Amino acid sequence: MARVSQYTGRRDPRFVGIHRGGLLDEPTHRLLAAWAAECAEHVLPLFAAKCPDDDRPARAIETARAWSRGEATVTEAREAAFAAHAAARDATDPVAREVARACGHAVATAHMADHELGAPFYAIRAVRLASPASEAQVAGECECRWQRDRLPDAIRELVVSDQKLRAAKFQSAFDC
Image 1 (cartoon, one colour):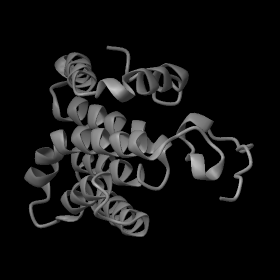
Image 2 (cartoon, one colour):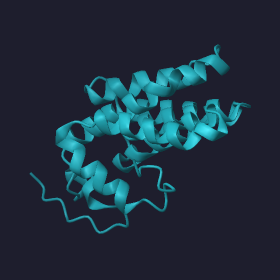
Image 3 (cartoon, rainbow, N blue to C red):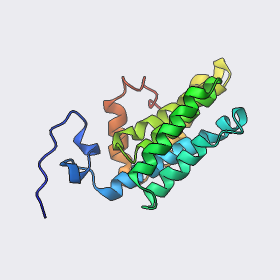
């Protein structure tokens, strides 16, 4: 077996596959994608209510789940991510746009594991936007707690530490 050199890029090596010199093993990567898909799927009804004829975000979730089970390729996941992000660009409703972005990031986790926070972040944004302004903050915190409750123990520490590390980038959405 050829020796893989240590990863020296700018990404967090915890989210770079072992086969690329990082620290991420395949089972952990697949758990990250499955959890991201669950976070996006939780808000998918908000998209369906606004864009009932557009199934690209739902197909992205299906592909993310299939990839997490080893039943889809990274190429299929990337194509589904592009399609979900196209749905976000096409959406005129801001809630639908954020949900489609959540779905795009969920399936993109198959290609780049550090997309794992995109799905929950955009899901929280969607929930906040869908709520009355006076309830938006609390609704976002409830969504964040729902997401945390679904984190598998095997990835809990990794995800929570990444949320803290990238709090500024994700506008402290994970402070719940």
